[in-house]
View 1 (cartoon, helix red, strand yellow):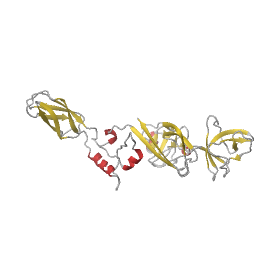
View 2 (view 1 turned 30 degrees about the vertical axis):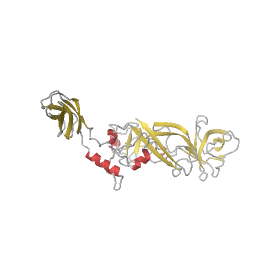
View 3 (view 1 turned 120 degrees about the vertical axis):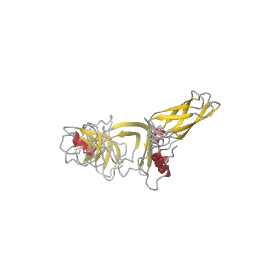
Length: 361
C-alpha cells in the first residue's frame, strides 16, 4: 500500500511509527524508486471510485445471478453478483467508476428476493492520492541534527536539558520595522503584523496578506520587496535561518577562558554597585563574546557598557564590557507548540546530536 523512501527510513522510522507523506511535485531524476512509484500512484488515483461492495443481506431463493444496478452522482461503475445455495455470496466490481460521493445499489432478477448490498466508495481524490489520509496519519515527527556549533551559531560548550518546538519565532534584528513604501522585505520570507496603524488591506495585498483586513498577529509571505503606500503599522520578520543563538551576550577582553567557563556566575558593576547578574552559557576566547542566561536567582538586570564584570559576590575590579547584544530571536514572541524536559545532554565541538520528536494531534 505504501513504500517508505530510504531517506525517510533513516530519519523517521521507529519501532512504533512509519513516515508517510504526500508528494507535491514530480521527483527529480534519479530519485528513490519509492518516490517515483508513489508519484505514479498519486497521478493515477481514481476520485470517487467504488472498489468494493458490502453484502448487508444475502437474500433467499436465487437460482441465478441477479442484476446489480448502481446509481448515484458518479458514473460508469458496474458489478456482477455470485450466488450459491439460493443466496448472494459475492459481488465483483467490473468497473470501479469515478466521481461518486454517494451511491445506491439495487439487486433485481435471479428469481430471489431481499438481497441488499452497500457500496464502499473511495476517498475524495482516490486511494493513493494522499497517503497521509489513507493511512490516517495523525502524528508529526520532527528530526533535527545539530553538528558542533553549527558554524558558530549555537553553543557547543554546554549541556542542554530542554527541547521545544516554537511556531513563528521573530528575529530580533527585524522586530518593529515600520511599514512604508521604502521598507525592504525579502521575497519568499514570512512576516508578522505587529501593529496595524492606518494600514489598509490594499497595502498588505501586494505583499501577500490573505486576510479581508490586516489583522495584528497575522503571518504573511512577502511576494514583493515593499508594501505600497505609507502607513504607521509595524511588521517583524519570522525566523528563516536554520539555527539561532537565543542568548543575550556581552563582549569583554578575550583570552579569559579559564575564568568564564560554562555555568560561571558573574555580575556587572559600576564602582562596586551591582547592576546585573548572569550565568555563562558560552565564552569565545578569541572574540571575547560571552553568551549568558538569567533566571529568578540572578534577576533580570540589564548589562551596559559602563559595567565591569567579575565573579558574583567577589570584590575584584573585573573586566570592562565593550558591547552588549540582544539575542538573535526575540524572547516571548512565537507560540510554544511543544516542550520536553530531559536529562542533561553534553555537547562538544566535534559532536553530532540527532533530536527526534513524535507529536500527536
